[in-house]
Length: 453
Ligand code: CS2
Image 1 (spheres, rainbow, N blue to C red):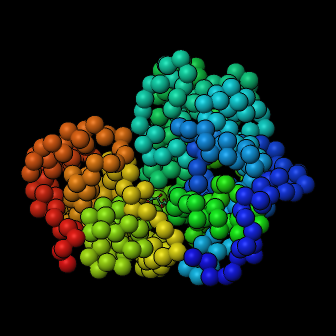
Image 2: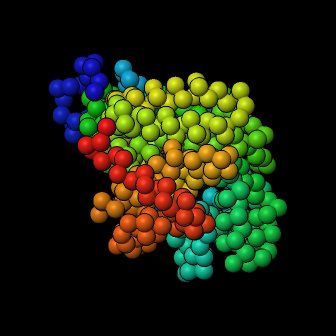
Image 3: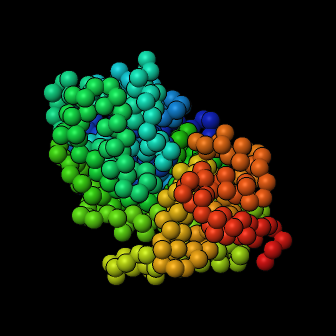
């Protein structure tokens, strides 16, 4: 917690003025970015980068929620402003972010289409979760309900309005996310009409990015802390680490903010950076999520203090590092920095949050390293251990979220190697047919039960 005595510690937070109602309305930047997936990560990352771009006065964001409208309602009530709390291992610093100028319910397709069709809109950013990139055909339903089907509806309006090209920027932890988004969007559009698909193909640039900033869920204590320290009521502050990173690759045919002023890096080949982040950071996160919870820990920082978990992470990193080439990647420094970031005990990053949607995440975090290690003639035990811990964790947990939840429940009804095979099949049918991998992953289960050292 914050050691400093908060400024208004004695006042009743309910009597404080509400953020956004306290100041003379600021001159808001015009909407030129539409965002799908208004959540904490969008606000700590893309909204922060946009606020810190040299030309931030020209770039406002209209952000749409995903499944529920709640986040938009809360932000609307405070003029779309929110406090970003940067939490280092020793202190908190507070900043009001004003780059989001409109917060809207994702189900408001009319407003989305209107904004995407506006010639002034130049960029669409996405944080829609890894699982949302799986192809589906919901544009055929009376109202588009998935983020990508909503995006296609918006792009159709832009085509009809003759508003010209723009960039779609995927900011989810998906390898080659620009191309994955492109294929999914084109498949949906083709299901509607070929002309639309052709227009998207020519006019929409799909930018790939690697995004990074650890942003745990906000708690009621955080809301109270902001009230005490800042002297206003903010019902939607965002807590994040000081570190931030954004690597982008692709064209912006209608322009973009000067995100490089805030440290964003534009590259021609994003693959190595993406793998470094997905394997070393996200891979370790997933390993800690399952192994750590099996060993009775709740947060990343707690799990990392456990020598068994730390050892598993280091072993996985050694394997991954063997497939990350180039001095520019600075792998030893990157690993050291990760240990420090994960070890920041003032950030309560809950393992249960990271454990969600494991089927989608492990395909990108464990499988590439396992496959690369086996292709190099080695066991890949470090990566296989992540899959083993995932199976063990799900076998022991009734409450979990996953796009393949029904299949996971079926798999847990099986026993022994059969169960292991069914779980592996949810990640990769090919791998499930490999008896060597099946027995390897079966053998590696049980390593993280709380009494093993
Ligand atoms: C985490 C990520 O929840 C998860 O799966 O691994 O959200 C991670 O915290 C971010 O990618 C950090 O940039």
